[in-house]
Image (cartoon, rainbow, N blue to C red):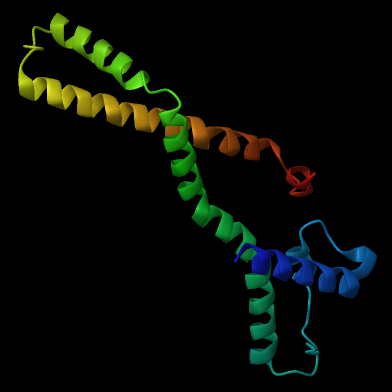
Amino acid sequence: ALFTTAGLYVLLGGVSAVYFGSKTLSSVNLNFSDLGYGVDPDTAPAWKVLLVRALSAVVVIFPAADTVSVFPLIANTLGNNLSTSAPSLPRYINDRIRERQERRGVDVDDRSVKKERMALAKRINAILWRLVASLPPIVASAFASDLALSLQ
């Protein structure tokens, strides 16, 4: 599967480079923004021109939509992997929650309280690491105005 995917990318990249030549943009899908697919807008029926424009828009927008759809999966996976790199953090969070409960007069040795506290500590740990994984790309995207910056 890996060799098939790599082969298809090389094939598509080569065909695009040959077709667009030196005018190939850094993100090849942007080359299709004004592609007419052989339809002359002056002589073709309006529905055909509209269809061609819609197809061009889909080709241009698809990579962004694809990235937005896969980003939560990547952030979740990276967050879980980072979480396993700090196995003592849930215990630390659990201890801090226990201290707060003791100050409020909660029976911290009750079995159900312990169970709830550990579940909360694990949940806080997961959320923390997922934020660590997802916030840097979101913040960096606020400053990046050119896609070619991320490709270099």
